[in-house]
Length: 70
Figure 1: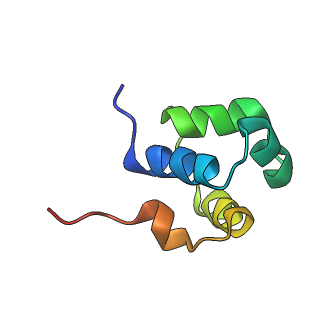
Figure 2 (figure 1 turned 90 degrees about the vertical axis):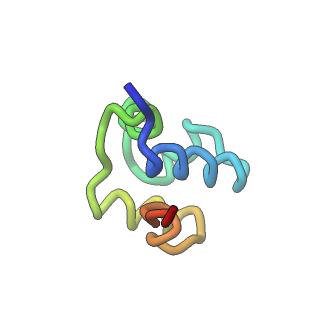
C-alpha cells in the first residue's frame, strides 16, 4: 500500500520537532498503535486528530493536508 501524503507529512513533522512516536501518541492521548497506523497510511486520520496533531506540533492543519499542485 502506498503511503498517503498526509501520513508522510505527519511522520516528517514529528521527526522534525524531535518527538518519538511514543511521545507524540502520549501527547495526543492515543495509543502508539493508532499513531503508527496513521503514519503508515493504513488508518485515515479524521479532522479532530489532524487538528490535535497540528496543535501539538505547533503547525497549521493545512500543512498536514495541503495538496501539492503539479
